[in-house]
Image (spheres, rainbow, N blue to C red):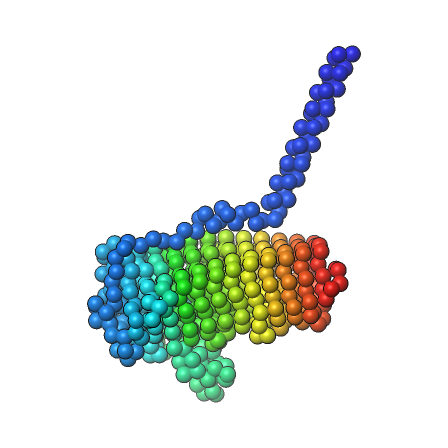
Length: 468
């Protein structure tokens, strides 16, 4: 009898232990499933650079803040002196300082005083010689971005001042071949150069031979850091960009915070992390002519050749006004995108098209996975709140079928839109595992469009007050 009781006790203990183990596994799977538990670890890896307490005012090197004198050489000398001294702040003091391209070096913080404007020249020759860059996700030698760095570490742009690109219908924007931006029939534009570059990339022509710049019409980015580490961009205001505005490429450990972006030109994306890892975009204001934040990883064959994803990107406490999308992935995402987190943002404008946007096609290919959005307040968007589209631009004409999976949207509210969800995949590659939870979509005109979607789960979701 005692042996029986002892055996029974052991069995009960074993059953209890198995139950506890099962519950623990289930609990862990739920937490891991949410994905948000990874955010603290990612944030711990994003550490802004610190600079020596040494100042290098550009006026000491001959800069004059009259808005007319070319200060390019003075700024270059100040950056070089700061770099050689082991780092510090290159100060743009009160005044308006005209310049051409600026190239930052390691351990340099370009500081724009709150009463200062860094004003970029409209003369395209001020952005030569050409540098190693990307245009629409394809590597090339092109005009220098207005503020550029290549293979540098510990660099920053800070201060409360203004950085004004002076782009407009009379400078840069007309190259986009759009009449609303100053282009007229017979004027030069980027069409031929763009097609040539895309063809070069597909033929795998070496980047050193993909030379554009003078005599060509591919617009540069406003700020582009290429293959850099430990980056901070903080508190500055950006205006009138030629094209993409903040564009880190193949970078790691990037902090972009409290930046104000107001530029409504063609392809004026606000911030485009491309093939970059561990990026924080926090407390920024976007009012743009294209996507507010667009995460990318290279285009078509070039993106697959380089094959570096964008990953571990956190977006917090941002405000999005005008733009094609608030938080966007693509369309240049052939190198994959994963682990994207957006929370506590505000989006509202009749000129904002979508809140969460993923755009791709079978020329781009790539895998987009583990995308999280929560606690986002949306006022008006003109199209859909959540928009995932596999037929963007050229459509389904390629051999590289995209994959989009693991999309989690929680506690998002919107007041007016055409659609709540617009999800349009391929029959051979449906959009998979989309979770919409605790969301309220009001003022929806046409409901949802759902084509080729698998494992769509909606929990506590209302559209126009009706539980889904």
